[in-house]
Length: 330
Picture (cartoon, rainbow, N blue to C red):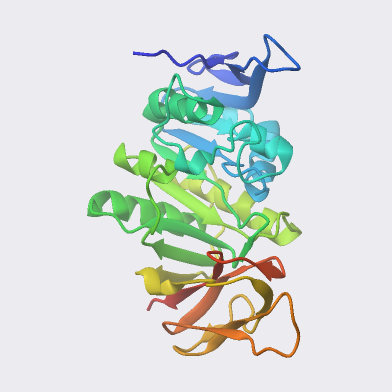
């Protein structure tokens, strides 16, 4: 069996605050004995739960990295009961390039699990988390937003699972995060996802979609910071009082929540994020990209609810996600 070449430059199991790297050897044209150096902070104080905290699973999503960098900078060992493993830039090559996938091997880290110890760079990162870091964790928080191509209402999410005891624990953590929206999500593309790897190990997972367009905002960054602190208080790793505000519970029960483009063109969004829609409403129109005077193609809601995500760029291609509708739960 191949052995993963990633090595931490800091201890993973000693009390104190430790800042360092996950060192992944990577020989390339500009550095024959080079390495990918993935920043990591481990903060440990005595016995307690372990939280594995990740941002930039996709490299063009920024609220998580901001919240995790602040946490790593400001947290002292005496603030913690248990352990924090903080990886602000999960897919480090993608983060440095500002792209969804790795510029090295085009790997989508959130579709690379369980990974391979003898695979490409992205597969090795996935394998290291699968075999070394995830087994240490009780709870994982993996931050996402829409990147450059989608824009979401800010929500925390937990998945609909066959294991209802685990699902309840994930829902509890999602509610503790307390984003403006809380989404109970049936994942339509779970193969190879980090989320799936976490849940199959029986670990609690909270994930998010906090905005989009390839940048953060003051509001979305504040939601990430507050939610992260709330979850860590919920699990007894940090002390203090959670900040709880109203949150709208949204369900995404099936594929009718998603609309995909059947052709390319100029996108005209007809409903803003968070706006109500009724089944049959026109959510978006796509105009011909290469001629004038032609009628647009209408994209209609297949169920009633709220528009929780939309395609962000003004041009759209066949197969792109046009919009996502969530159903408000009582």
